[in-house]
Image (cartoon, rainbow, N blue to C red):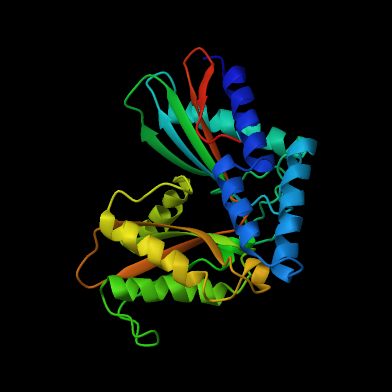
Length: 296
């Protein structure tokens, strides 16, 4: 494939991800808005969120002033190697920043200097896998700093929560994470959770669960039951959108698990804000987008 064609398609992916929420997220926001009392602060928060969604899409401008960490997953077929993809995506990122689809949002951790183009060590955050077919599949997510700041990790047992090394202990950790966020993560939020793994792989897997559809059902019946219970209990905490109180503290809970070593039992929680920006496409070698992964 011509490098410029790949870059053009990746630029459109970045644009859509930044300015358009997927339809499953919009449905969840609409459902949450219907639950809040007329005239309440929670209802007002949802009204502002809904207005923002519409304006961003019409004007093709970022949904949030914090376009966040750029997280990219690419399943590479034989005709596209990692070096080629990385170069095309980085050029698309720089262009997206220049035209305003992305904010200048990547700074040197030592000096604090802004790169001006969202490029630098670890920015974007790439995750590559080998594709089983001939198509290139790309998924991306923009994760804002506010929601990342309230992401957290627990080590079980946790005497503060009375949480042991079992699913009940996991439940207590997840509910505590929702309570501690208290609207600081731009709620209503969506939680991606990994049970097990080490400290690094647990967080990676927790974020990966956020690529699931909002209204899907976990393939593991134990985790499906836990997701449903936690969502109900979290929405009974009264935290509400933006911490204003109300019936919608969370819009979704997505849980996965990884094997662990006997000495460690981590519960990693990746908190995602209401501006749940993720998208992706399937691209042929000829440069045609055959399918968008999340309808907008």
